[in-house]
Every structure is written in structure tokens, then in C-alpha cells.
Length: 381
Ligand code: PMP
Image (cartoon, rainbow, N blue to C red; front, side, top):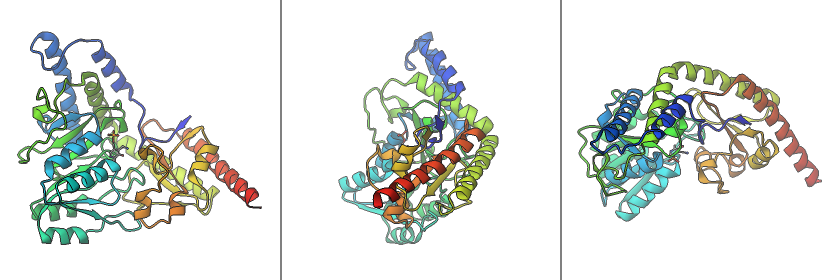
């Protein structure tokens, strides 16, 4: 298989596998005071330090969770207060949009979804209006979009929100480990990530909560009070160790990997455009993650193209929604027609992608699109 679905999940990094195997081979609950417990706790401490170094924060500002979905739920529940306004963007992952809808409905408050332009850039005017009206409790905007890779310019959003006394959260799931991040510079109050997008195992992630931010905890899991009361339950030491090792590997290679992946993405897009002249690349060309190509093949259903090339692991925009046959809300928000949204493939590249993968993907896609077109033409006759 040519694996080009890193935005769905990335292959486990060797370093993460080794750290996990080592951890699985030792016994100990990180909360126990004996030596075995201290061994587990020291693995957790090391992972927390490594993740903190990747993010430019302190280890004490990180809460380990089961992934970004949980981190997002924790962040919006903690940062929102009944009767207030929550501002997010129309292109968020369902793990923000559905949570935002639920917390504002439960709290009888207002939800504002900021629209985007045709390049995927967030429009700020409705945020300015909401801030002027007051009562904005929290603004949540993703750093990088999972379907298009488009990056959000968070600076102006943070400024407006903070001037209005609102908290800022960012779902950085697709960004962390792919482009450099420094939480000393990026003044968000909370940030979510999921390890499996950058080479850690599935089922482990974290929420960053900036020190000194006053907020009620609204834990989803209560019990033994682990993670400073934010998330009770025995820590997943092997998962956490894998997350730390993947963070360390990603940090040390970030610049090289990003440059190499961007070059491969360029080859892919160029190759597709020269073979399939009417295809269109979605999203801002410069403000984009290096590894994502969202490509529309007008008139050709993406699910049929994928079915015609099972050896290429790509996705049709909506992979994260478990195959639900709804058109991509992200592409529709950018102004694509429903038909174009349904004719869009997402290729997402990552640290282990090779030139050979890209050549095979270009050839297979060109053939699959031509085959689907031919099949459609013959049934139309
Ligand atoms: N946010 C974004 C932007 C994502 O791409 C994903 C994963 N598709 C999530 C949140 C959820 O991550 P997880 O399923 O690991 O909780």
C-alpha cells in the first residue's frame, strides 16, 4: 500500500515503538510510591518533558488525555460558562464543532461559527461583532485544517479575544509535530493534540493549559484525581512513553521533514495537474501544512476513484466522520459546490513518505480518474 493518509493517522515511529515496548515490559502504577511506581512515574515525567520541549511550554502545563477529542471536550467545557458566547470556525473538526454545539446548548448560550473565504482563511468580522457585544467566554480556532491543511493566522484572533477578556483554545491536532510551534510566542490559553498524527500510538494525546489561567476544571472523568484533577484514572504509561518518544523524534527532525515533505507534495500536485489538466488544488497555496494536498477532480466522484485504486491509501475529505456520506462541511464552507466537494481527494504525506510513493500515487490516480470517467461515460450512453 502507498500510505498517503497521515491526517487520518500516521505510522508509529520506531522510537515510539521502542519506548512503548520497554514500558510494557516493566510493572508499576505511576501513582505508587515504591520503586516500581517511581519507575513508571519517571517514564511519564520524561515524556512530559519531551512533549513540553516540542511545544515550548513547561511540563506542568500538560494534561495527558486519550487524544484530541478528549482534550477538546475538556477545553471547551472548562472554558465555557452558561449563558455566554462561544466562538469557533465553520471548518473545525467535529471534535470541536459538536462539542461547541453541545456546551452552548446545555448552557443556553450563543454559538458563533466564523466563516472562511475561498482559500480557507477565517473571516474575522463576526468575531469583532461578538467581542463588541461582550459575553464571549472562549474562542476556539484550529491551527491547521485536517482536510485542506490550511493554516489559521491565530495572531489577530488571539488579540481580539484577549482584548474582550475571552480565553483562546486551539485544536492543533494536525499541526503539532509537523511545523514548529512555540507556546512562548503563540499566546493561546489552551491547545489540544493527538499523538497518532505524528508517530505516537493511537489513543494518547494531551491538553495544554497555560499556567495561571483561572478556570474551573470540569473533568470528564472523576475519581483518583490524577493529572491535577483534570483527568482521573491510572495513567497509560506505555502510551505516554510512546507519545514522548514520538515528540522527541519529531522535534529533532521537524525542519528537515517539513522541507522534504513539502517538496514531495509539490511533485504530487504538479504531477496530477500535468496528467489531469482540469483538477483543482484547494486551499491557500502558501499558508498550508507541507504534507496535505486537497484535489478536486470535477465530475468524478471521489469514492469511486478511491475504490478504483485500493493500493493507494488516500481519503475523500470525510474520513474522520467514519465514512458518513455527507459532503465535506470544510469544502462547502470554502464555497465548493456539493458535487465538487464530493469529487475531492485528500492526500496527506508524512515523515515516511518516499518519492516512489508519490510517483505511484500520481500514476494510479491518473488511471483511476480516467477509468471512472470512462465508466461514467459508458453508462450515460
Ligand atoms: N481535531 C482534528 C483537527 C483532527 O484532525 C482529529 C483527528 N482526525 C481530531 C481532532 C480528533 O483526534 P482523535 O480522534 O485522535 O481524538
